[in-house]
Image 1 (cartoon, rainbow, N blue to C red):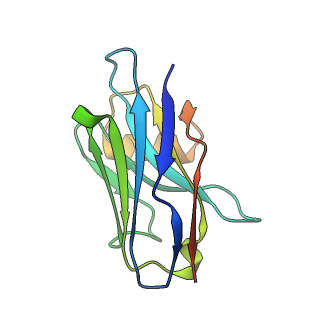
Image 2 (spheres, rainbow, N blue to C red):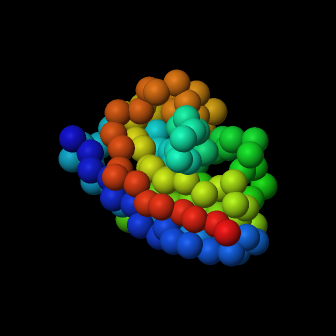
Length: 128
């Protein structure tokens, strides 16, 4: 059983930055894919970024070059640094985990296909 808790959301002006954090607890030593998804009001859920156990990453085209996903395994924390925010980035952001030791590319494929097993409660990001 894995518990995920997001923090760091808020309201900012376009062009500003936010850094989301997600602390996760694991009670075993399996490798995990980690990722972020977002869902804007009235829209489908969108995979934002994923990171493998080896630190390799994959991003949605809409955030490439602006967002950076990273993980600190020692602190059991996942991050999403969001720069140059745009109004279209407004959404509820969720972190997610899957018990699989894959690359960032593979983790992202699982993320967008609904293959992640554990989800946080979400943190709201609003850009005006």
